[in-house]
Image (cartoon, rainbow, N blue to C red; front, top):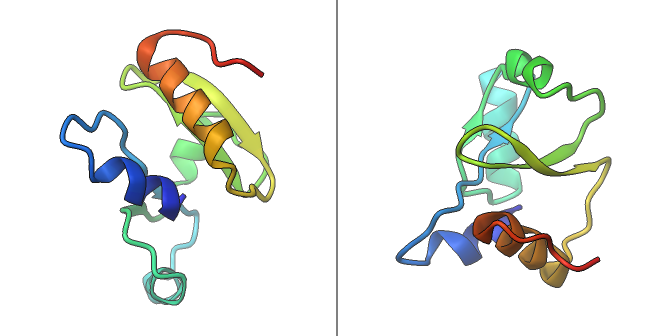
Length: 101
């Protein structure tokens, strides 16, 4: 997610927001994780309500959500960065087209 954040956050007309969500209540643990993994995107702590709202039952989960709150794509479990795949998904939901699989 950090790679996607770095790629899309630099664009002038950026329409993509990446936010990490954790259920961890210990802010020091979250800070340590963020520091150790050199994350620069925002992290929402204590996100249990958000997990419930989006029916997240497995961690980690990656959701691509429109600004209206609709889930366009979901990935469950550990996710390996695949730039072409994520670019196709992101471009697809940002332009209203379905990415080729």
